Image (cartoon, rainbow, N blue to C red; front, side, top):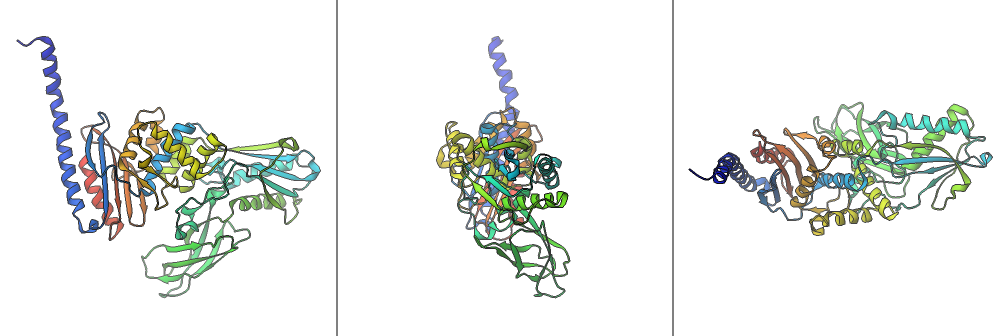
Length: 465
């Protein structure tokens, strides 16, 4: 008879064999599916990367170009999300402060923002446009001894450029290309409702804009296209110009077709909305109240009025990933910079992120980021870096909240990413035999339709099921 310790080792070895056999089978199946995918005509000129590890053991299941820098599109948001959890904390909240000049007869309102991207958002009852305006206007009516004659916004510590490097002209006038300011409002978004004619090529008119734009106008150069062609309308706002244009097409026979744009000046939009509310309710606010940005404010000259606090970080990240909100990502990157360096810039925030993961054995060269959201085509991230960060998240106390933020796609918990010629997925999947995998799958420069590429990528990932 074998000695006891050898019998124990034998039992352990035998019990390990099924799992080992399963892992081998998955690796072989995945490799075969990847080869078939790589040889597809749609990928003839593409660059591909697939990196998969066993979540329990950390063992690499498949590594195909895992350390090649790829354009990640919105899959980059998992890096920003996890970094924010680690460096800001799951309970982090933004705060926007309001104060009145101590000499109440002056009628000067001071706003000290913090880059809150949820201010005026419709995603929570407490952050809605109506809720914020009501709270602030009621506080002013209660405390102010005179009409508001001037509004000052403290912009100290915030870089003036709201748009990160590399964002393309076609994006930045549209809602997903909204820049991140120190004072954001209504997710820096407005809606345009369009009306098209009955015939192909008919001009498309603007039926309404909500909320109404203050100090900006918009006109349409759109034409009507065939039924089923969808939204191919793009808003262009020239820099420092008071007028924008909508170009492209929408389908014929549309009476209320909605597209969404990026607010050119969210600070002014919020303040004008607030002043309008004060005028309607109290009738005391004069017209043409000056709005000034300032970087030199003496707290001794003001008396606190009220504060608006955002939802906690884990709630913000839920929507960031579920709806792939670029604004939220960019605001968090700047907040990281402001917390650590007192200067909120995208470049500084990304440097902090790279340094943090460098200390955890992810080379800076694998996190070549120029923004936080992945909207820029200049980003280059490796699948290995994404998987390593997702593995790190697995061990953290806040993981449950992060996991909940990931969309359910193809019956897998994963974040998707899409920009022109780019498709990506990264996340987690637990197989039918309870084996958990962490993966990143990135495709750059494919040809043909995006839905076709997506289904073919799903076919590869299905090997993990």
